[in-house]
Image 1 (cartoon, rainbow, N blue to C red):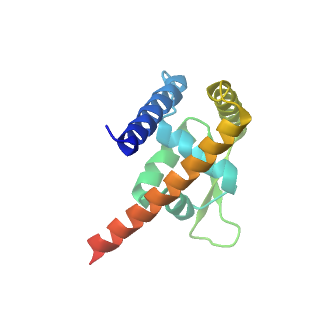
Image 2: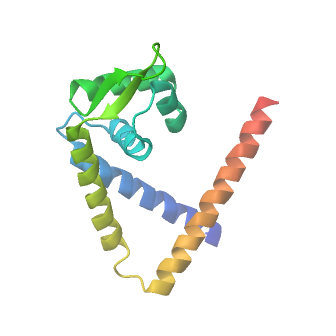
Length: 151
């Protein structure tokens, strides 16, 4: 096995473990990973149109409508009229939505601290830099593949 394959396998294993671990707190609730991701986006961007949310999450407007409908029904978000565009509505976090995001952020901080606890500061720096380079490289590879598909 080459070093490159060993690294890819390690990244994939870690990604799978993180995804499974992050989904566990939502078991038995109305939240899913996609709904939680929408809460993160709203927390970062503030009140947004559904079109802006679809763009930010790289999903279809129809997909966003379903996510917002579910989050509105569960009390995590509210739709309000757009102040300057009569045709648009804004999606806003409710108090419950903000509380959930705050709890998720706290859990994220604790998970991150626990995950790197065994690494010395230079190892953390090297790992962070390496992962950043891998992510940048992968984004570039995907962009090239998309361009080739469009031809």
